[in-house]
Length: 149
Image 1 (tube, rainbow, N blue to C red):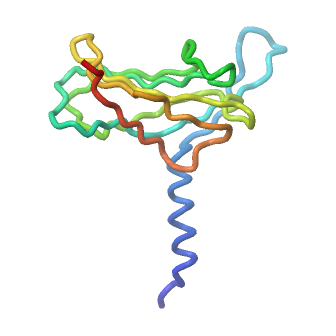
Image 2 (image 1 turned 30 degrees about the vertical axis):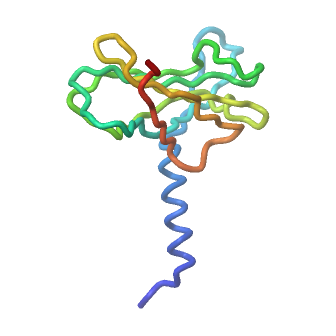
């Protein structure tokens, strides 16, 4: 028996949405008993570049989220993930955990990535990936470029 195409398309769309947020957990801050619980979400995506060449082992990948709600300037990161490659090549998957309150309507986040080799930036996001409130509907695809010379 064949399934109609429409339900299959809807199932595929749900699978894509499920890939965006893999885990939602409630974290209660331990500083004071009056502090409210926070809901943390994971944003998933990949970092890639289009220029040729393989990454050496030990390249440092950093993905950061910045609050752009206050005039759009990149300030201190509100969330960050960093790791060293062990021979992996692009696309490099990442998970960035942040407070769900940062994804509310009216909030703007900028996500950017850098790749460092021997401490020097070899690839970076020339512009942040902007999220205008809400969880993005698909995994983030951050494309990094070499710095201008």
